[in-house]
Length: 174
Image (cartoon, rainbow, N blue to C red; front, side, top):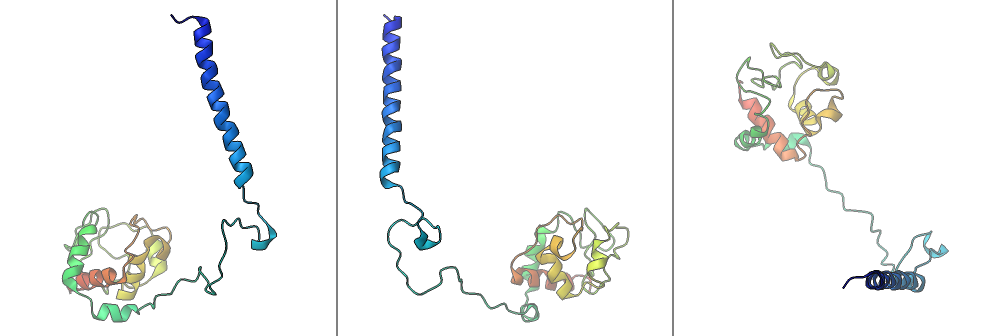
């Protein structure tokens, strides 16, 4: 049935087929290889380059609406829904700390003054009072606003969400 000669023939067939594929790949690379010429500063381009006169890398910049304008039209009821992301670490009851300090009456409160919570110290270097503008900066990127803070949240990127959340926090306890 299967003797050494049959096994050798089968193995030789697979090796020969593999060799044909490798040689075909080598031939295709040799024929269709695009050389990096001096025409495009070392950039390898397939096909023809058509200059349209536009700079492709320039993306239209969005006009940044000032936070004060967004905050003036903020909706606290939408902020209440956004606060659900914060509930895992923060409480709204006065004096009830979790993994983070309580947020009762936080807007306008001095930074680092939540009773019974041990702060990391990085916040007091970033701001003195939790104004809406300071909260906006902190909620956008906590690690960037106060490097060394123990808050592990990555931040809210949407300015409207931040404004709505701050408006909700301002309505709690004031």
